[in-house]
Length: 87
View 1 (cartoon, rainbow, N blue to C red):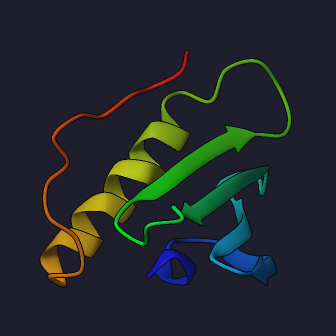
View 2 (view 1 turned 180 degrees about the vertical axis):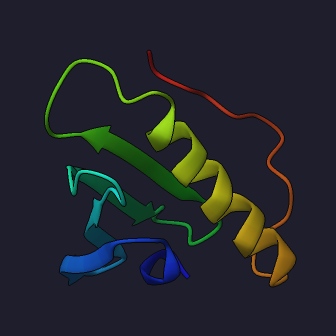
């Protein structure tokens, strides 16, 4: 489902970890999207980060939220009890 996000290409995947680069529609700026399945296989740790610039206009937060909603709609995850955003 992460590779269905706009501009997404898989860079690296191994042992429950995926590194994806997402390119913006307008200017083609690259952002990293990282997904890690926890050791117990019960949780995903997701991070999206701009590679260029200081501010992304909320694009990375929106990307992670879109991924979360898509996974929920597909019945692959349930709603998280807690969401932590690093600013």
